[in-house]
Length: 267
Image 1 (tube, rainbow, N blue to C red):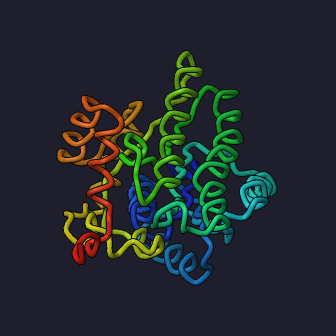
Image 2 (spheres, helix red, strand yellow):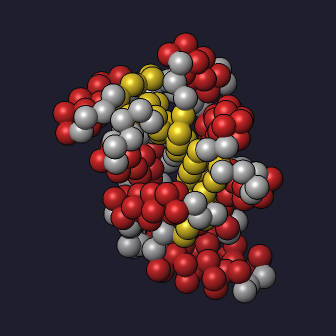
């Protein structure tokens, strides 16, 4: 029973984050769930605490706001919560050609996908290394292994998350702390709706993974202290093939997968 241990999950009310929260709750970790919708936070909190003998603390913050990650840290410190596990799951994208997309929206994505991850990891890692115990799961994506036309900023941020995770893992390899990078492929979550990406070929014609399966892969890798896990056999094959291609060819292939289904129909 891990009734005295705490895990924090960002974006823990939907998709992969929710499924990870369920797995942590089933293992009797007390939870801190960070998301921006109070009603959804309350619903998830009640559901998990009704099922399991755990404490669920909710923090209503939009991590795409510059000050929000610092405010999360302050809330943890005020409650005297020590994190045994940190899951940086929250992330967003925006769909379209970079020349046409909104700069402010992309800067908010950089803040959420990169800055919030760095701030929360810095805070948790310092405490974990000091006591020589703890685990961090950073949710990257196979998008972080291949440049992505129509999602240039998202792919760039996920590349950062993955290589950032691998680098700090190497730095602390002599400690009892582990950092794991989870790389899912296209998954059946609300991500594509929020990114205005429903008309892309990868959504319209692709085979979307079950977020519960992705979460299980990530959770197992986290608990085993692995450096990374690519979720799904097809995604493992896709990345292996991309690694053997010139970047220009891998980028072209990804662009064809992500282009709108209507592209070229009138040509």
